[in-house]
Amino acid sequence: MTGVLTVLGLGPGGPGTTTPEASAALETASDIVGYTTYTDRVSPRPSQRIHASDNRVEADRAHHALTLAAEGRSVAVVSSGDPGVFAMAAVVCEAIEAEPAAWGTVELRILPGVTAMLAAAARAGAPLGHDFCAINLSDNLKPAALVEKRLRLAAEADFAMALYNPRSKARPDGFDRALRVLREACDDDRPVIFARAVTRPDETLSVVPLPQATAEMADMQTVVIVGSSATRVVARPAGPLVYTPRAVPA
Ligand code: SAH
Image (cartoon, rainbow, N blue to C red; front, side, top):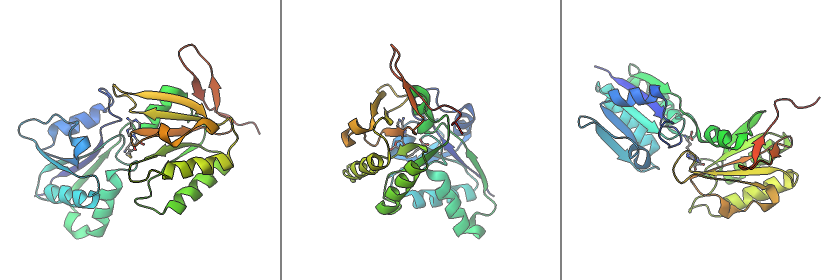
């Protein structure tokens, strides 16, 4: 007997930011698997089993979820935001590729969610209105030199950028280095948006020009959006409106 494995995103955190599709999948799951911080956001029914684990054990978590599904259970793997953006969907795909015989018949569903950069961009205006890229600044899963190279080339290509995992206690200096790379590659009027805990009760948003951006403005609950050279900041009584026009002049 084989079951179903649903990989879903809970959205950025606030009530109402989980899609109805993801909520329905959570309702019907027999088992909910995820990093403790994310499973804590789920209110399980008495019959549902929660399997919470530490953030660093992603491969074990995927294996465990697939094992439960192969036993016939209906398993939901939860991430914050979207499950395909720096989260569990790719880890599950990797596990399936590694052991095709074991998991071949498990039904896999991946349900999208509202990723942090989209929630943050919507709060600020439309900074991702033209071409943009997303970069995970953590060097846990890739060399720090590659992070810097991607930042430099993205700035050179004049993308707006969404920077995930900007700063953690384990990497206090990484974001300082990232800001240095950006200052070398970008003009001084480049707007930087620090969006923290977006959609949650403690949400904060600040917009500063690149030279005024400091590493202390970000933590692991912050997504940072750096404008392109075309990004505009419009002063309004309620706070700045940041947007990148759809068109770049020829
Ligand atoms: N899958 C998630 C991203 C996981 S990586 C998603 O799609 O959003 C974790 C990083 O996401 C955090 O370090 C932070 O940069 C960002 N993040 C997640 N939720 C956030 C929120 N509510 N506000 C601001 N940034 C958030």
